Amino acid sequence: MEILQGIWAVVLGAASLAPLATFGVVLVAYLAYRQRDRADRRDQWWKRAQWAFDAALDGRDPQRRLAGLKVLVQLIGSDLATPEDADLMSALAVGIRDEEGSGRRGAAIPPPVQGLIVAEAERLVEAARAKGRP
Image (cartoon, rainbow, N blue to C red; front, side, top):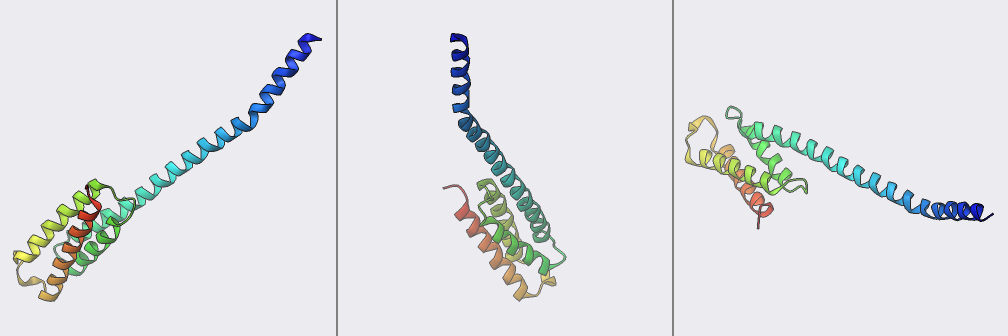
């Protein structure tokens, strides 16, 4: 009889741990879901950033270049952007701003569009500085 009481005590003890074990499983599943969700969102963010980099570096189409810079300004404000991303975008914007501002590209771009590109590059530098390392 004592053996049965001992077994019954073990069963009751294990049953009392079931809710705790269930909570642990749910917590691990939730954390895995959040990590995967962030990774997926970051992947989509990076695909948009790649398009914007390509567009911003397009020397043949000033409108596409301007659109790429505008998209980069929006992307750098995302919580998915890292300080390293901000450094990269800042370097890109400084290069574009200097290239457009110095007139090295010639008269192929109308001055109003060129001014917009320079202004947007400056906005990107400021946004990247705000996002970057303190």
